[in-house]
Image 1 (cartoon, rainbow, N blue to C red):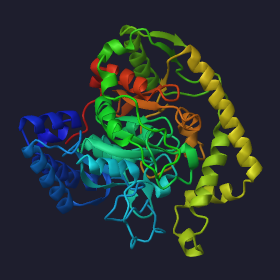
Image 2 (cartoon, rainbow, N blue to C red):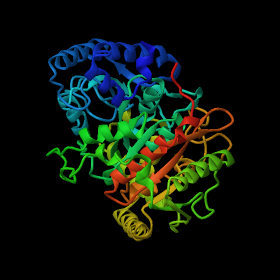
Image 3 (tube, rainbow, N blue to C red):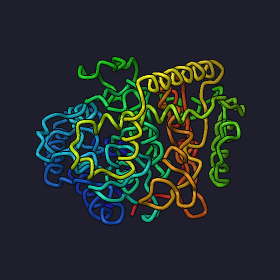
Image 4 (cartoon, rainbow, N blue to C red):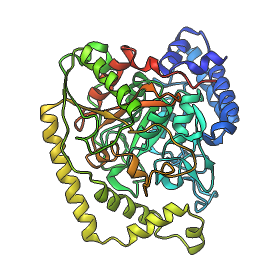
Length: 470
């Protein structure tokens, strides 16, 4: 049974088709793994064995009749506890959320998975309202890294990353407003994609506005493409959705490693010298870039050339946090994570003119990256300049940094520009902690980012990252 936890969603569906195993067997194995690892890593805020097994039985019946509901029928899925899932509370890591509900709606991505027959195992941990790049909250505690539980899983989709890495389901839905699927993917040795903004519909709209994306967190790029084919379908509740996808994301992977040949790739190892990258991270990322070149990409070391937009990002992010908590009572505010209280106060103090100035810088950054991608098909950087640090803190101890954005310089700029960006595992440091390489494409080039990521998997770049299963 334990072998089932190591299979990708693509492999599970193939097994259902041949009758090698059933959704019930797979779901039982995933639930067992979730229970075994929960105390160690705290990936879940809720696991519903009874409902998951009911869904699995229904899926097994569809497979016996040869009538699967969709491409992920019977595949165990987890959902970050920021996204609505009907039938149970979405706490968002906060004591300020009333458990009573009502909880009658699915978020668009959850609804599409339900229609496709996915089996929902449970909801995964998040920091309060997804506000920071690590996963701990007053309500649900600290989420540890599957490779070293005393280290952080990253965030804010840390629970989803830990669930996938430990084998508690091969697919998870995360959200990313400043790196929140890519940070934990890098720290936990899995794949994640932040799609182009609007490619995956979102509802309710995020208080962080158009910085916030919904994206797949998976074992590999092929599974992410499979998941994207499901969750990218339109939903009338999101007026900013980009509309029907004119192609299959999975189909875009058909060329395999050949899909990289001739791509113009810009490699920026440290954003022009302004980011200090740990030597072991730099070496692993450089090896992945060399593999792209070996596969036929035309690689040039080139920097996009923008100054750090962190202050404008802070204006947008902190203002969003203030909006989240605007209607809270004094008692509710007192229950909040102290760091969240600080950024809410900061955001509330910023004016409309401050906000519009940040929007102007965001637009300038978008134009700059648009021009950059006229010359280059992809930009490659480290996902993170560091590997996972101690759990339960916002910044590494002794770093002198004030906020999580100080150690995530490669992630949040591309939320501002709304570009697709993926993290691919590419090695480990001497402590055995995973390292990720980030692939960034121009807006709407999600299929290209997935294809290039898949080529790295096909070429064995991820083989240097040992499994966290077990």
